Amino acid sequence: MTATASIPAAVPKVGKFRSTKLPAVDERTLDNGLRALAVRKPGVPLIQARLVLPAPRPKATTADRAKQMVLAETLQSGTQHRDSVEVAEALQRMGANLHVRADSEDLRLQGAALSPSLADYLGLIAELLAEPAFPKGEVEIERARKAQEVLLQRSEPAMIARTAFKRRLFGEHPYAGGLPEPETVAGITAADLRRYFTSLVSARNGFLILVGDLRPAKALDAAEAALGSWTGAAKASRLPALPAVESGPILLVDRPGAAQSNIRIGGPALTRRDAGLPALLLANMIYGGYFSSRLVENIRERKGYTYSPRSWIDHQPLGSVLTIQADVGTEVTAPALLEMRYELGRIATVPVSTDELDAARRYLIGTTALSTQTQSGLAEYLQTLSLAGLGLDYLRELPKRLEKVTVDDVRDAAAEYLAPARLPTVIVGDTKAIRDSLETLDTVEDAPQP
Image (tube, rainbow, N blue to C red; front, top):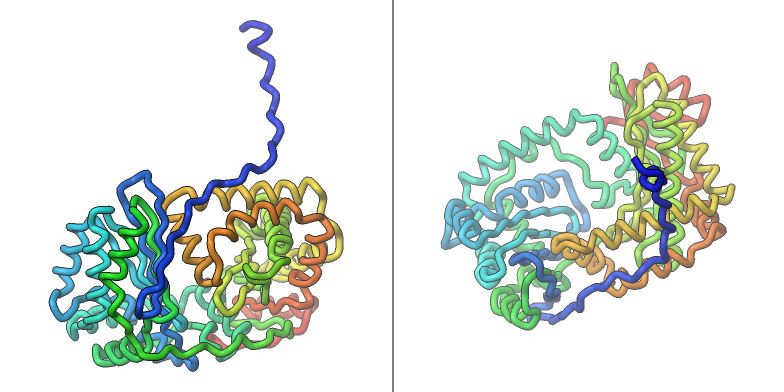
């Protein structure tokens, strides 16, 4: 080995952020009120499609949630002209896939097709929307399968924690979601789904996103030809505003004999339309938003209380929510909660270091840029922004806004939204084993099984 070969190469300095080039978005509003957006992003001969249709249920019941579940599974079960096999064969011929999701706010159809098949693909989607059959036999099969799935989910600790936490934040609001009883799901009929679909799902104020190897004008023409005449429900309702959130005592959901406790902490956060969001995003990153965060370093690396603690901000049309989660051993439930709150208090009161801020900033800018480099990633981001009433300009400006965030900005955002006294806590675990130790930290209130 030569002397020069043994000298390690110098680690290059991190350069300044370079703006990501984002494609133009062509847009057209169809006669039925549906917005269609087309973005050319070649590379592979595919087109990603995201269709979001308003279907709000202002007073959602467990029966409504059961219908949403079964509807999502059966919308592709056939039309007035094709059965489920023929629908599947048509998708296969197009080199396409299609997935359906329904909730208290909207109906979403998501998939992709080979570029030459776009017109046929949109035509099939239009047929499913305009003439859904919900065949009795298919509905009976799917409702039985879904009822069994719900039965299993209702026993899963993570699902119990998620449901209890959302109920704590949203009360009786449709955003609380939750799981219906299995027998409610099993009782859904084809007639129930037809009435639900025709009375709720609307084209007006919905949007279609097409991203991929396409010519925008031709893609929008295809969208108009396929979907422009379908209106759906005459008038869509609106969901009520989100309720105010107060911290209150720790809510404890009992799981006798549980080996783990599921800790959930969180509360309202800034939306994508708020000027202060970049500072809050960075505060969250430093606290628990990625693997190099304080939360991971504390309760995973130093204490060994949990494997994958994390925090994130979930953006929904009516508001954004900060969620912090950690699943820990029963015997360390109170110590883990103490450390989680300690880190919240520390970031809310003590300035972060410049190195921490720069590392979080680089990570967030880099992952945001990477997430838009694929057709599917760009389609997902454009869907998320469209739900917030924003366009790709948001992504163009976000890195610049992140670069302007200071240590003081992070502290101010954390003091407002990460202060532990302002965030409700829900814990699912063995009450007998953890209640006494939790009461040394805070008032504890028992909560029913969700």
